[in-house]
Amino acid sequence: MPGLEDLYREIILDHYRTPRNRGALDTPPAVVAQGHNPLCGDEIQVYLLVDGDVVQDVKVGGQGCSISQSSASMMTQAIKGKSVAEAHRILDAFRRMMGLEVDGDPEDVNLGDLEALQGVVKFPVRIKCATLAWTTLAQAMDDAGA
Amino acid sequence: MGLSAATIKEDFPILSRTIDGRPLVYLDSANSTHKPRQVIDAMANFMRNSYAPVNRSSYRLAAESNDFYEGARSRVQAFINARKAHEVIFTKNATEALNLIVQSWGRANLSAGDVVLLTHMEHHANIVPWQMLQAEKGFTIRWVPLTDDGQLDLTDLDRLLDGAKVFSFTAMSNVLGTITPVRRLTDAAHAAGALAIVDGCQYVPHHATDVHALGADFLAFSSHKLCGPTGVGVLWGHESLLDAMPPFLGGGNMISDVRLDGFDTAELPSKFEAGTPPIIEVVGLGAAVDYLDSIGMAAIRQHEMDLTGYALRTLKERFGDDIRIYGPDNVEVRGATLSFDFRGIHPHDVSQVLDQTNVCVRAGHHCAKPLMRILGTPATTRASFYIYNDEHDADALADALDSATDIFGF
Image (cartoon, rainbow over all chains, first blue to last red; front, top):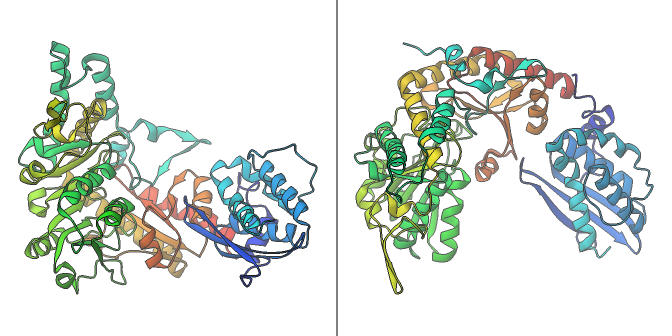
């Protein structure tokens, strides 16, 4: 549909249809953070298992729209197995791509599939959808002391 | 004589606006309605010619402004068939009107061991104020449940009302469109010795309203849902109740005397109108009420029943089981507010696709999260119709839903 190609890219719809890393992890050893989008009522859970300096595992529960669900799915792929420092870099880079203010200088981070979400910036009311999983991840990292 | 939505549409300047060369299909009137030029002009003319502070200054212009302000109160009084103009209190919005009741009447009359009865279909504005006071006072809140088709389940009403001091409920659900049997509920409340508070936000803009026929003790509604401006709401209450209540907000206008050791409150309605009121908005509300009266509330209700029936038929014929419309089928007990699930596509995505053809709907929890939990969904898509909508708008909604199928139909 004209005007929506930038928003509903095929890779986004693919992650929406078949979300990766859905489910839950045992807490402890994992931590879980709850995220809410008060605008639409979406609720998600981000389960995070950090072992030393590495994001061992991450899973996402809850429900949401195509943008929030695909963003969460791509997020899990992007950070799983990465070092905590690298996860933080990806988190910051994604927030910057969404037009959010982030402390420190921008770094050159390859966001891969996540760059498909760049089109969301043109639809300001949907930015909260795209960032829901990430805001929740940041909280989970805090809780994990990572 | 039926109303002509096409003619009415011409009264609303914004509805001749186009976006991307297409007209607006505004289906979000349960959220807020657009404003006719009669309201826009009344407010602009008042500011141009007659504006001055009210209830304070003695020059002629101030007296004229006062006449406009109090004139609007009289029109609202007539609109809801209140016995006295000073039973009509202007608030910031309907939410403030409900908070006023809870903080004034509730704080003075409720304590631990008391019971407040609400329903599962209430808007947050008729839930959270009670919960806020409950946290201090420790009274019990009971809930009237729903039937499968989204009406109030009144099977146990008498038991739920047993011992209740107040029953506060909506006259029409902002999610389900369900019109509640107000008179039956107010009668049952009174039989149990409880006050009856009616949230009329979704009802008053669409039905002839007579507070005495409804049997209400209090009625709250908003201006911006009935073609008036934002910034003003209405609380109506029985004079005897309002007289006995302590003031809500303190400040200018609500006092008859202030001393170093205390104050005396003003008479109604000033007692509940602390500070400079929304004078211009009240004048706009008066014009909005006149505008609706000029169309006729009976004609408005008939138009909406016809249009609701058409929209329900059209959506079901075109989409069958792919659409789940919440609330009752019978247009006698529902208003022109249709919340639905479409093919399991998230409401945010549905509304995004609809917006491409300027079909404006609301997606979300509609400030009724407890109800959403009971319906088992985090959100719905809601299309709501008003006097300026017609069958073409319902068709445009259906056409736009086809586009959602094209993108998300997997």
